Image (tube, rainbow, N blue to C red; front, side, top):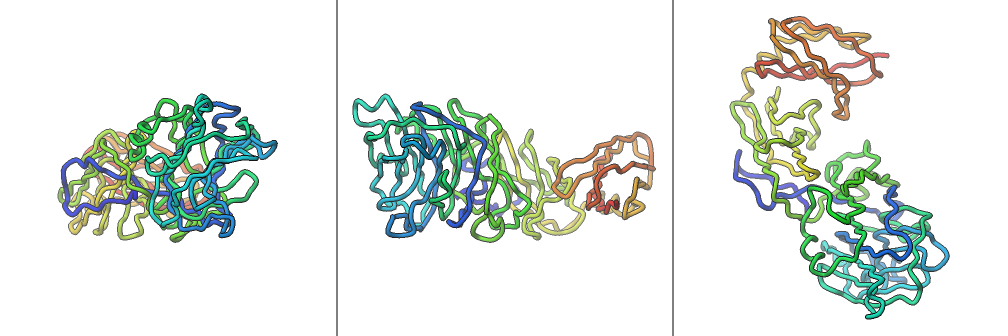
Length: 413
């Protein structure tokens, strides 16, 4: 389920089954993701894959069609490419005016990998469309309407392009390929989250953003990891709670990220090198700690901390490490630093307490983005202009001797 694994020791060996984070839950009412991806048009070969989890009765006599992905034009017939659940709560491909349905019901509340392959070269053998569930061929056949996918609407996830057929449940790992994958290729890849762009992968939405079931109302988009840097805009999502939000996803194998952390007298260090890091406060809903983006983090308060590690496009999270004793460096350094005035007008001053050969001062906004970075040499006093919008910011001070602290400031108009 792409769940966060919590280790029960402070350090451990390299995990061969490291797991990423999230899926996206759709409420079945008005949630959908509109991307700026126009995948294949016309009659070109393609494959669409996703992991889904739903209990919705998607039959016409029940709650109706549940769309996983769709793009193209709604008319004339043959101009859209709609991957959905319908008859018998099984997967189905529709192109407008005709479709092909599977037989395996997938609305049992469990995670299922589903895939549709369009291969125009298979028409002569009645296998232009193949539908797979959990790597098993459900059904294959031809359509009676020619596939000629239009270009009016880009890839949409969770809703048909005419605004109907809302998906209810969770969707994860949406992938669109520009070729017809074989069954062997589907089964080889379906349990693996890719850490780098893959040949022929034209759209790849992992839905790893946000905190599972947390407050994610500040998020408006999701990222594409195909290598083309597309985006998807979130529409209708509450982004808080257990539905209409980011949730735990399906377990996918990663083999390249070490998610262990050491605790050396109150100084936490992620074992994995060469990655991007974001330390979080486990006692505060895994809230991101502003400015804590280095491999090493020195907490200024006792508590439980973890680190999100991103390497080559894949993300994992460490265990929550309990810190009961603060680093003497952190404690002493934080106490001797004074920042004034606060609230801040056009500038702030730092009294460092002693002269340092090098001092790195970063200003970070509430989203964890670095606004300014300045370096000072051989000084115990810093005066720094503040030229940005009003709001709450964090000042991260790091010295050449490894001491570090973060001060919160309020910027006035």
